[in-house]
Length: 226
Image 1: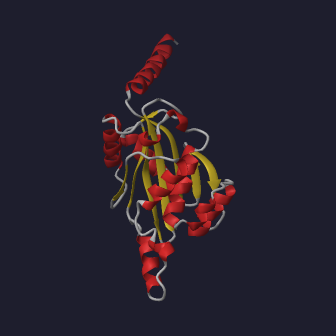
Image 2: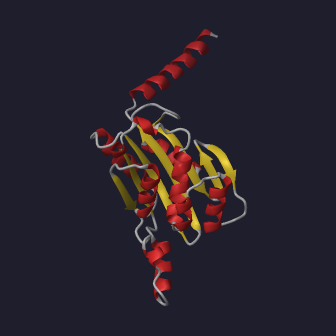
């Protein structure tokens, strides 16, 4: 009994030491993929049978969001906006941060190709300005920043597949060099109705989930969301 107590307390202490020695923390996560929506690992929505743009609209209505500009966004921006809204609602202590100290680092595979194709098709008749506005992948970052008033550094990368180590390196650079105090990072991709978003809120303080921000944890959350 004594050995069991000591072994378990040692494990507990090792875990606490690891948490306390970590520099940055994943305080919240959100994901939208394959008809499922998760927040901090908990299932919030299990598909309604709709797909693509219709599914995104059903999410917006299901959670009762009220943001009229949502209807004007392209699908990539809607996806990122919804994932960010779920990530930050009720948990993020935004008042603790200056707007210039919160930034975003996002990535995807297809850039804005879904809109590029649709815009090119519209050019054959009458070019659509509403589509042209979204023919850059970083517009999704702009929509999130406008919604929440963030003014910090932000970057959107194009990658063949999600690279957890790369994302961790980029975010750590911004936090370690005192450029940001908090960062939203992750993957937001939409192409021809196929989509996936996985976002992480990373802070210097051990709030919320308080997972150590490292490659292994980032990759595991992403893979579970597949």
